Image (cartoon, rainbow, N blue to C red):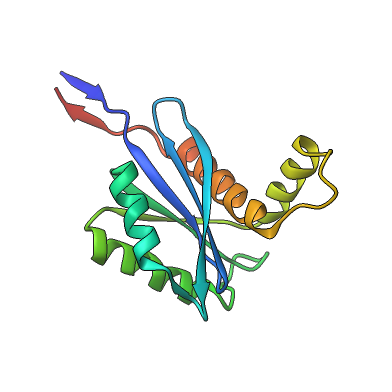
Length: 149
């Protein structure tokens, strides 16, 4: 008999200055925006990322892959893949990549809809909300994996 496990995922919206982070699980297919990790010249704050892995103990990782509107690689595509490969190497977890086109625009729209009382939206909020959008898209497109009971 196979049972669908409620796997937990950390998702990263990679950027050269900021990396948005969200957590989600496949049972409900929902995600929550967690935080934004700083990066200097594209180099992540690894101690902060390690703390997130220790706290959430994910079963796998999802990384948004920036692509051009025609589906070709964006200038950040290679760096996002490298970041995903580093996550895989450091934490020994399956790492999945997903097209993140328009996730930041959707995140900005969510901010405007949900936080109209704020006079401006912070870029940190956009980055972590973009990670949430990316993860929920990936969860919707990826069927749950059965595991032996």
